[in-house]
Image (cartoon, rainbow, N blue to C red; front, side, top):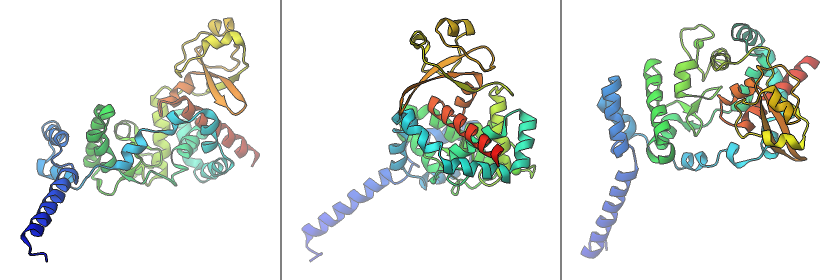
Length: 329
Ligand SMILES: [Ca+2]
């Protein structure tokens, strides 16, 4: 049967079609953007062309990554839905345990960088549930997909892919085994590649920076990140504002503190906690209706980790809950 000319022709045609389809989509080695990227890496950083081509020949487009990047929780959800994901009894309890297990390292980080242990614990708690969940996506696959097949943020992710390959080279890591989030963030504190190269530190002093396996390096790196982004030791983060209708005009989407005390007062809002004298007013949609919060400079610093008011508020509230439970124990 298979030898009839017509059928044979169609089998060959199907094979050719499948072959060419897989040739186009199977890997990134001949994707025009990848070819351009490889040339740049060779020229700017002295990478080996054949080696890089081989890396992209074993890397293919990841549909799941493209799906997830378009609907992050921070954009989809309101505070009423976002808070219960992160500020839970389970995560608070696990935070106290993480604090107790790493007490010495956290104290050392707090002393050196002036960042409270509760804040470091809360960041690692929100990012990866204290190192338990760290993404499950192959880093090279996620970053290549976003760099080459996600035009909206191609520039950012192409730069992160560049930083990733430099990171791998500098630290003699194996790019094939490194995992991270769908958005190309890695390790216990979920640093993106550029942050890893800029802010990650070797806090256990074993000669390597390892945010995947060293909890000490993760803790020190989070503290250093906050320090380098201007965290002010001892200053307030946020406080609940009593709603005044005249204060409504002061509400900002931006976490950047811009209002003076006089402006806040004129709007009927009276900050009580000590910050650096600049404030923002945020409106969050909670179950019981709108909540108004005064954001201080340190609140803005948390948003340098993830540019979202919801994220920063979840981290702040989790840190407060963990701290108060720890004091009781
Ligand atoms: Ca280390």
